[in-house]
Length: 90
Image (cartoon, rainbow, N blue to C red):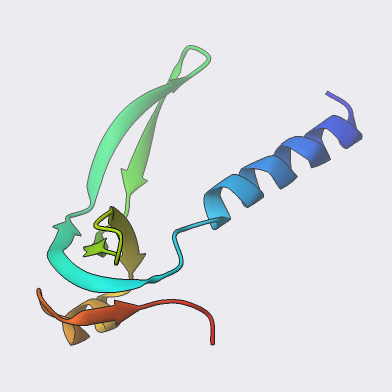
């Protein structure tokens, strides 16, 4: 793989994973997932992977659409179901 192709692939991954929903709405559900460990194969070699613990909200916007939003634990503790949520950049 050439350096240019590797750079393009890395940029594509960063752009696709870094673009989350930005908007305002009402928290309709709080989500929490414990960390877990799973096994994957790299070639023929088994490798243990660990998914981190995560916190989030399901937010209903003014159009009625539901969006999944990941937040840190401290922020997760500050909002309850039915509260306003706004993560637009100010």
